[in-house]
Image 1 (cartoon, one colour):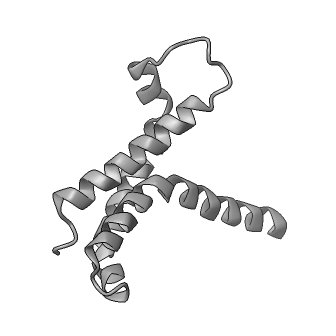
Image 2 (tube, rainbow, N blue to C red; image 1 turned 30 degrees about the vertical axis):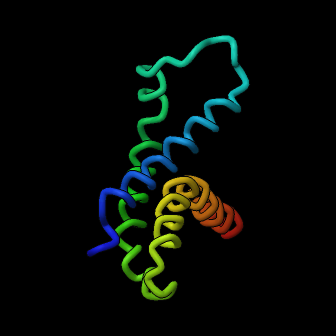
Image 3 (cartoon, one colour; image 1 turned 120 degrees about the vertical axis):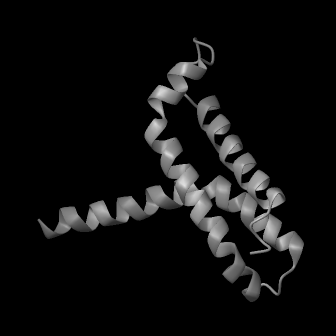
Length: 105
């Protein structure tokens, strides 16, 4: 598993962190500052899902590397984007399942 290395893990974590900070920056109540304890308490489920799905993406990166010819720059890009967009991807998938479940009722 040559694609599961510290560089790709760091890029994925950086992607998750940037996504979370951008989400924090878009909040409606900008009067209060950043409180790490509150953020962890409020986002524990999202953070857990994000970490687990990022790890799954990194595990699948070996297969993706075969399709893109093993180009290390593209693998690093996929690792970063996997960390950045994983919450959006999961949200879109679960929304699709919820919408389908509501239609069938």
